[in-house]
Amino acid sequence: LLPSALFASPLPLPLKLYNVLTRRKEVFKPLRKDWVGFYTCGPTVYNFAHLGNLRTYVFEDLLRRTLEYAGYRVRQVMNITDVEDKIIRDAKKAGKDIFAFVRPYEAAFFADLQKLNIKKAWKYPKATENIPEMIKLIRQLLKKGLAYRADDSIYYDISKFKPYGRLSGFRKNRTTSGSQTANSYHRIDADEYSKKDVQDFVLWKGKKAGEPFWNADLEKGRLAPTGGDKTRSGILPGRPGWHIECSAMSMKYLGPSFDIHAGGVDLIFPHHENEIAQSEGATGKPFVKFFVEGEHLLVNGEKMAKSLGNIFTLRDLETRGFKPLAFRYLVLTSHYRSKLNFSWKSLAAAQNSLERLYNFIRDLEREHDLERGQKRLLTKTVLTNAEKQFRQALFNDLDTPQAVALIWNIVRDYHQNPASFSPKEVLNLLYKFDRVLGLNLKKIKPAKIPTIIKKLTNQREKLRKKGKWKEADALRAKIKKLGYNIEDTTEGPKITPLS
Ligand code: AMP
Ligand code: ZN
Image 1 (cartoon, helix red, strand yellow):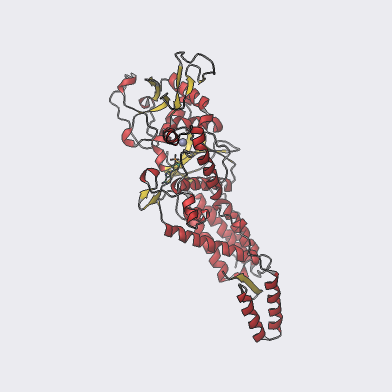
Image 2 (spheres, protein in one colour):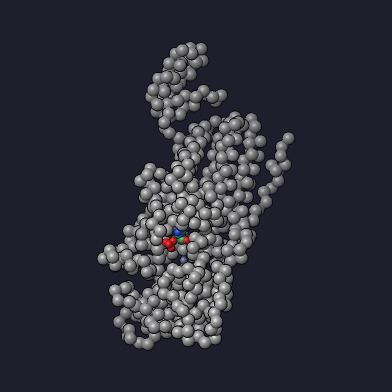
């Protein structure tokens, strides 16, 4: 009797994502026909990325790969913040200009991404290369009365943007609405602040001694040309605030409205809230349809953060003998909206599981050519079902722990009844899953068995066929001494390296 599922045509499953804007899981429908616009806040390159940052980048990569698995073409943009308070502070300490200071960290960032098998974004715009776009946006906000000048800086007037707080749930309770003189409000210059400091935030920071600056022409909405009159009234030397960077760079590549914006939950307020205020304030159009935000990586119950001094980098992990992909595996085993407590013990367990999975792949590779499967039809049902469940898990707001569990179900089923599976089909299915999981399964090759070992194994087979058990056993012992194990299976001898 065959399960009817075998004959049912697979239904196109809807992809559901938890949207922080609406606070519920929603079916994802792209704004455009031919591509999905996906913006991810990138690193501030003043140091090496820590595992917390990397958890977020892995989650974003999983989201992107899931979109691709669902058949969408994704245009992913990730910015590089290369001018910012902390960069300026630390570059000064190191006695370097900001450009020379960030270079090695930027290179390290890309190396980390590669080690974690994170797919390359479509664009990696740098803040310092997009200053004119930011000035243009600030000019629009000034023109619309959403921004004002105080001293030598420009601030966003959050009381003028009615939906302010929609994303983070913060409600404005300004008492002094109406009179918008620049001095009647509290303002904040720091790029990072908490909900306790809900205030007008800075868009353009007036020039300070010893800091890098650009001459913004706020009347024309561009950089003042070199050699022009820098003392003209509309010219304001300074540098951009952090929030304006992301509004300018996302809209430059993805348009005024795009599909998905992602980051870690610490960015919901103020960063993403401010991005909405800037972008929608300037364009009058909805900025982003889905905000998808990943939870934190913790250490002993506290957020991993440089300021708390509890960070580890990918280098630390490698120094201790771990594979970067073990960290990726660890990230996969927890849902992106759950906090994940990092420990070396859990990382070791993850590495162990990953090695076991690799060994399973090696077994399948070795058995690749075996054409078993009198029961192939049934196997196909099992595999089709597994694939369906895999999609179901991923499309249910990226349930990667469930997706990983499904892989182990396949391993268990195979081991329970290897004769009923075609190794090739199982392999192909796992490779397909790995297009999303990104554990590099395709790069795992069976250990090469030396010719001498193969020769000895063949000799042993001949002896066995003649019933010369004693001699056959002696040969097996010899092979073992050379570092290989022989297992007699219904398909013939299986050779595996001993280590
Ligand atoms: P930053 O370089 O500080 O702007 O952070 C880069 C990304 O890492 C942002 O998306 C943050 O939300 C994210 N992030 C920072 N700390 C953590 C953490 N402990 N766990 C997860 N993500 C984090
Ligand atoms: Zn950002």
